[in-house]
Image (tube, rainbow, N blue to C red; front, top):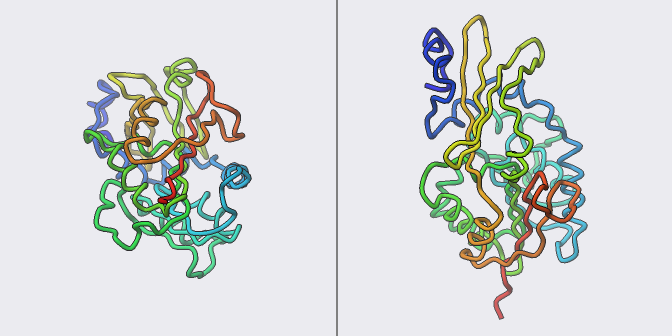
Length: 271
């Protein structure tokens, strides 16, 4: 298994790309994951939310759903600006971290829950409920199931009020390919991670090997190389209109070499 710690990792060292479709479930709940990616800053999330809310047509407060919220950086940024926030992630460790963050008071207007975005059907209380739905940092591309991204976008659309907005954030596969570092070693808080990267059969993959409590461990991250046309088609199919497309968190216009695909789409107002 790609999320295994122990003697079996000898086998994995011979096949660093051994994987399974649900790689994110065990990996996101490890302390090693949070150590490796602990550099993701509160300030970056806060600046992005501030920039988005400065866009013409986006209201300054209301109800927001943050899907795939991780440890809650963006959710907290919305909350402190007066939004009523509902946020979820499939990682129990991330949601626990979000709930216990010192900036999170006991407040009925900020909720975190464990939920899988592939299983949003039947949430009738969310239908037409939100002014804004957000999905930051690439989680739409984790899933192996055919048409998973399209179905999730349709669910997001159903949760929006007429005139509401959807924000999608994804890496730009072209930029990833151009800047790909095939192998490197990263040391964080005394743990050295041996990392291999590749693009293979439409997936961007990262193999991560390290030692934890004396045991060799191995995880493989993989996300689909989803492109701008695929997102545009999914949004159109869900009845949403693309309003803006940016290439980074500073909201510069998208170009083929931009590091991100950051989209603002709107649900039409029914007349």
